[in-house]
Each structure stands twice: as C-alpha cells, then as structure tokens.
Length: 424
Image (cartoon, rainbow, N blue to C red; front, side, top):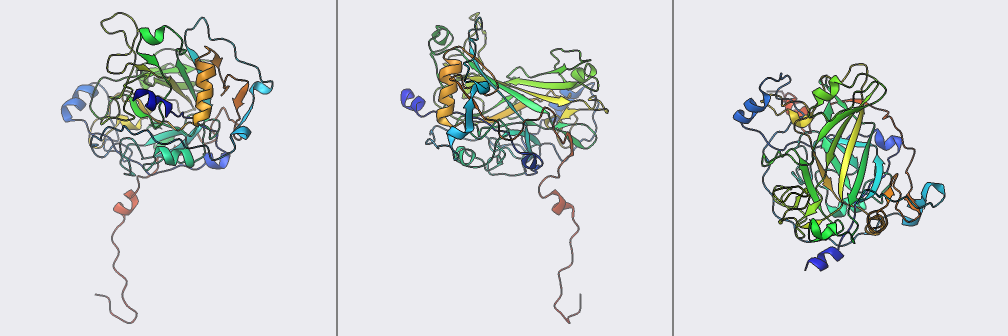
C-alpha cells in the first residue's frame, strides 16, 4: 500500500514573476481562530496593544476538516520543461559535496507574490476568511486552490513554473497602515540520502515528498498546540546585530535602518506515510526531535523521513525603522495584541513538476550534494523567469480592504423609481 503511494509522488516549486506580475496584489482572504479572553490576557500581559479589532486579523474560528488520503494523478507542466532549465551556472558544472554535513541540500530564491485574505488549507473555498497573508511561489494561489489548479495555473515567483508550489505566511505590518513586503525569500530543502543508515535509525525510510501534500507549521492557531518549526527572527546588514530573536520587537531593536530583518521557520520533515492532510493540518506530519530516546529521530506516528525545508523571508528596514512591525496573525479582532511575531507560522501546498522534483531528490539529496540557485545537481539548473531583484520595488503597500468590507460599510441607497413616478 505504502509503496504504491510513494510511486505516486510529485514535487513542488516556484518561479520568478515579471515586474507587471509583481505589481498585482490580491485582496481576497481572511480568518483562522479566535483565542479566548483568558489566553489573550496571559499572552499579552505586559505588552501594549493598539488597533484592536483590525480588519486584517482573523474573523472566525475554523472548522476541522477531514483526513485526505487520495493521491492525485500526476499532472505534467504546462510549458516545455526543456526550455525552463539551463546548463548549471552556464557551464553544466556539478555541485560540490555537502560533506561533512550528512544531508543533501537543494536551495533557491523566491520573490514576494500576492497579498490576500485567503487560505486554501484552513479555509478552502472561503475567500476572505483568513488573516492577511503574504504569498510566495504560485501567483494564482487563492482560497479555491487545489493540487490540480496549482499545477495548471498561475506563474511562480520561485524561479519558474516547474515549481508551482504555494508558500504563504502572515503578512508583515508596519503599524502605520502598510504591509511590509519582503525583498526576497530563501528556501532550502534537506534530507538524508536514501542510502544513509540514518534513514533507518531516525525513522523507517527516507522517501520523496508525496504528491498533493500540504500542511501548516509554526504557531498553532487551530488547536493551540505547541509551536513547531523553531520560528525566529534575525538581522543582517552593515550595522546589524545578528541573533536568534523570539519576537520581531527584539530583532528590531538590533536591526537599525539600512539592514534587513529576517523571519525564519522550518517545515516538517517527518510524515505518517498515509495522509496528505489532517483535520488540523498538522497531525499527518511532524518534526524530528530528541524525545526521551536521546538522539534525533521521527516519532512512531510519523516514521517516514521527507525532505523538510527552511523558509527565510528578508525585509528591508527603511527610515521608519521596524520597532512597530508585527504579523497580521498577532492581532485578532476585539482582542489584545500578541507579542510581535509570537504567532509566526507558515503554510505549504506542494505542486512541483514530478520529474523535476525527482531530479533534485535523486541528485542533490541522494548524492549528498550542496545545490544552490535552483541547481538540480545533474548539470542543469532552473532557468530564472524575468530578472531577479534583491530589493522589492514596492516595499510598503497599503493594507488591502477585506473582500466585502467596503460594500458592508456603504450606506444603503434608495431604489430607482420608474420614469415619471413619484419617489416615496
């Protein structure tokens, strides 16, 4: 059964958007979960709050979904795959080994995509029900996204459409009515080679990412469980004071104007071998840990080791500084502000081209190579769509209105009367 499931695997990816595509900002998503007053009082004690009841926070409590077990059929890329790769670094060179590290790595860069109030994992087919999100990868991602729609529609801000996966996180807000868009995002997948003894020591087997897999990781806004993924904040630049900061406020105090503030979080690397999604969008996957056994391994409920990825979004700190920055999920309508960045989490819905994912797993991962820049490890490299920019052209954009909000606030108008009739 499991073997048949693994045969039906597919991978996820992203491509860079054109300047015109980057200028399009969506505004069609909205909510997750409302914390109880006791929880808010406990977590916000000693932290100031303003703009309570904001229009960009969560609006309703999500309903738990059902397990997803059926693996979708493979869907080939809509473009010519051969034209979307190029000789690695212009020469076809093979990457160097990742040793002495014991995991292979596949890295690439993404530019920021759409901003919207959608979440196809937590609120499928319910546009406008989530807090405001910043997307990366598939530019067509929205509340109605499925594996099929991601594989067949949308451009990509992660190199090109061979990776149509969708990645999203809470939007970064500046406290002055703007979304702070990141300059770029670094994503890297890592896993033990399939022949490594660690595959059996730390689990049952090292396997590819199953086609159709999706999950949420980081702060648990659905079931209030322990945060996963080790989310943290950092600073990089000429006058930065780098560190492993637990809140945006701490990072901002060490990240003056002219530097970049980073938000880093790690995706699950363990899987139960059966489900592509679970009711709370977390229970089918897990993170390797030390537990009571004293060495790193996946737990017994998630014994299959998959390529896990780390996502790091980097935001330029402008003249206004970053001391007032916070995430859209830090603030729920009618409730106090959570410490800035304390609700950091991310979502992922895989939609890689099957063949391309097989290539980077076979070469970068299984041959213990250190692949970067979309290098596939076989002498080929993902070809950048458009021109990659290290600085986003639109760093600050107005927080978009929630869909329907304008209509709800508009005063009612009197119905039109027939020509020649008297108004009531």
